[in-house]
Image (cartoon, rainbow, N blue to C red; front, side):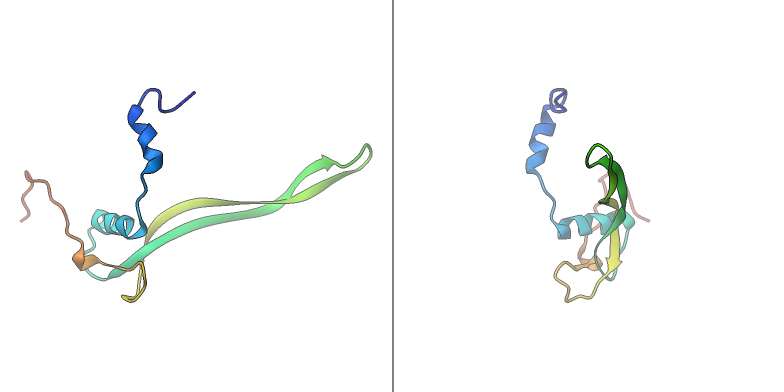
Length: 103
């Protein structure tokens, strides 16, 4: 089944990417952070272990080593202003819809 059949807009998504600084700005905005320097923080999970048994010939089986890396989360971490991907939260403008007033 082709996932783009029911939604033709999905076919364009494989061409769209968001760079690290843009994603950092979006997260700063999402969390309402107004000061400090931040960069993206990726949380990965690594798992290794034995996989098998596999038959190597008619009478012998053996296990093989296997591993996997998984993506577990995305967030922000404090960053030094000189870091390449650091974003100054004070420079991120919080966009407020026109029908909302701030007190």
